[in-house]
Length: 327
Image (cartoon, rainbow, N blue to C red; front, side):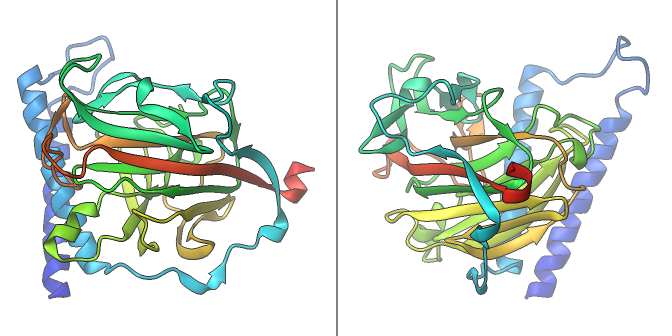
C-alpha cells in the first residue's frame, strides 16, 4: 500500500513540475519590461482552485505515507543554553501595537483578514473565525493574522507558542516565521518561511481518523515558479482543540529542529539554513480562492457548520536566544 502511495505522490509531483516547466516556458526569457503572458482573472481563479486541489491530494498522500508519529520523548529541547529575549503574555485589554501589526487586511485565500477578529481575553490572544453577512469587506468568512514585522525580528534561537487550536473544517491556524527576503529565485539562506506548526487536519475527525495532528514545513524561493517546499513533520499533539500545547522550533546555523511540548518531532536544513533575522506570525486562514471557500487541504468551510465560530487561543509567544549570542 505504501509503495503504491509513494508512486502516486511521485507521479503528482512530476505532473506539477511539468506544469510549472510549461508555464515557465510560456514566459519569454527577456528583460523585465518586455511582454509576459498573464492569465485572465478567471483563468487565475481556476488555476488557484486547481492548486488547492493538488495541495490537498499531495498532503493526504503524505499523511498516509509518513504516518503521524508521536514526539520523541528521549529527544527534548535543552533550555539551559538559552536566554529569554522576547515574552508576549497577552496580558491587558488591547494588543500591544508596539510589537504587533495587523498585516494585509482584506481578501486572504477563502476569507478575509480583519483586525477586529483578534482580541485579548483572560490573558490570551483570541483570533476568532466566523461567517459574517455584513462584514467590512462583504459577506464571507472573517479571521485575522498578526505579526512582528519590522518591530521585532531575530536570527537563530528557540521560538515557542502555547495555544489551543481552532476546531473547524476549512481553516488552519499557524505559528510561523518569515522574512521579506523570501522572493522568487532567492535561496533559503536569504530567508525561509519556517512553519513551526500548521493545523489543517481537523476534518479527519468526521472520517473516523485521528485529527490531533499538526504539520511543520519549510518554504523558500518565493511563492511563484521558484517556490520550494519540504514537509518536515506530521506529528500528534495532546487533545489540541481543547487543551493547551506548546509548539517550538530551534534554529541555528546547522538547521531547524521542531518540538511539541518540548519533545522533538523532526529536523531539517532544507534549502540552506536562513542567515537573516525573521519576524514571528500568528494566523488563521480559510481555505479557498478570492475570498470564497473552496476545497483544500483543510476541507471546506461552510457558513452553516456547527463548528463556527472557531477560536485560535494563544496563551503566550516567547523567543529565546543562545546565551553566548545574547551576551
